[in-house]
Length: 193
Image 1 (cartoon, rainbow, N blue to C red):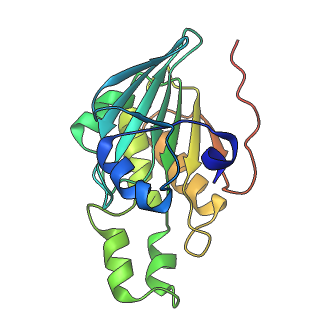
Image 2: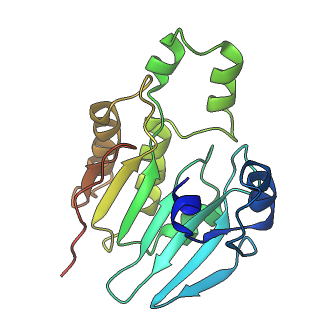
C-alpha cells in the first residue's frame, strides 16, 4: 500500500515479485535482485541471503554502512550455518522471536495444522530458538538486538526479552541492549557514536 501510494520502489527477488504482482497489477516500480546478490544503494551495501521459511524465495538481509552493519532475520524456521555466518558482523540485529512455546500450544484460536506450520523448520523462531540464535551470532561487536515479529496472541515482549536475555547472560554476552519492536509503532532511533 505504501509503495503504491507514494511510488516507492519495491526491491525483491523474482519469485517474490511474481507472487505480489497479481495483488498489485498496476505497480511497475519493481527493482529485482537475485537471492544472494549484493545491492548498492547510495552509501549502503546490502547483501541478501536465503532463509528457510514457507514463502516464495525468502531472504534475510545484512546492511553494511560506515557507521555499522545491521542484520535482519525474520520469518525463518531455523538458522542455517549460512544465516549465522552472514549476520555475525552485525552491530545491530533484528531477530525474530515469534512465539512462546507454551502460549502457542495453549492457544485456542489456531488449529493444530497452523501450530505445526509455525513450529516447523520452515515456520517461525520461538523465543527459545531466537535465544539460541542470539547466543551464536552475538559478538563483542554487536551492541543492539531488536526482537521482532512477536505474535500478539502467543508471545509478549517480556517473554521474548526474558528468554533471550537469560541466554545471553549465560553465554557471557550481557553487553547487548535488547529492544522490543511492534508492528504499529516505531522503535526509538538508533544512534551510534
